[in-house]
Length: 256
Image 1 (tube, one colour):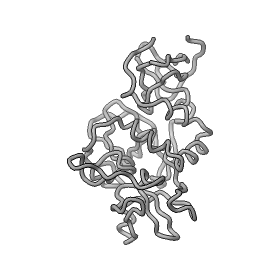
Image 2 (cartoon, helix red, strand yellow; image 1 turned 30 degrees about the vertical axis):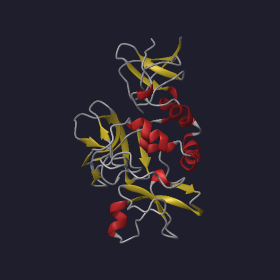
Image 3 (cartoon, rainbow, N blue to C red; image 1 turned 90 degrees about the vertical axis):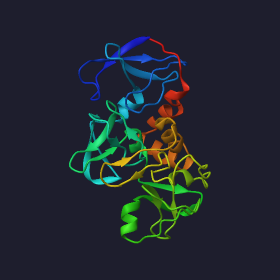
Image 4 (cartoon, one colour; image 1 turned 90 degrees about the horizontal axis):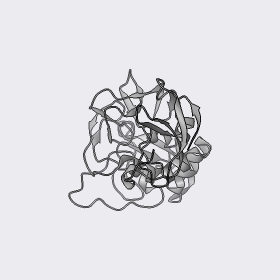
């Protein structure tokens, strides 16, 4: 049922129609890559363009982001095939949306910008842990072994400056399961979402590893209690409905 109209910076060429998607909808949000499953969204039928209403409310044309504090990031589409998210190390497909710093070549998926700058973990309840770039920690000769699983932290991870405690994102609520043989090398992305070796600050790195939905994996990490509290606080609760909707891999049929 269509009953409202609005515009959004991600699709400025046409007005978007506000609609209620069915519970078995197979449409995918063009901004966060997650499914709808009965959520309210905005659609351009002419372009087959869909975004969650929550994503339209949250994702703005330009943002500041803790993982790249030096410059603002602008929302735009990927024009080529060689982009990799500098936070989760997964590919940024051509035509998809990223937040990008052009001078630095820094790219990040819109969904990945929901990772908070600071979180708390039951594994280290005494202090907050701050997001840290592994390359910077290595340059400063800081301790980088994860206190949850015992493996080296690469890419982005969380660290307590006071105590030196380090945790992968997926270890915030407890040690993650070890990767099985043949699945990929040690994780270097922000939660092991990809198993690529990323260069860190600049855009680059070759994504390899498990062939699972990026939105499903990132969403699962964001939904963990230690992270979700901070995410919901930062988004005024807008993230919950989107992340609860599940990934595109879990849907098959389409509604109109």
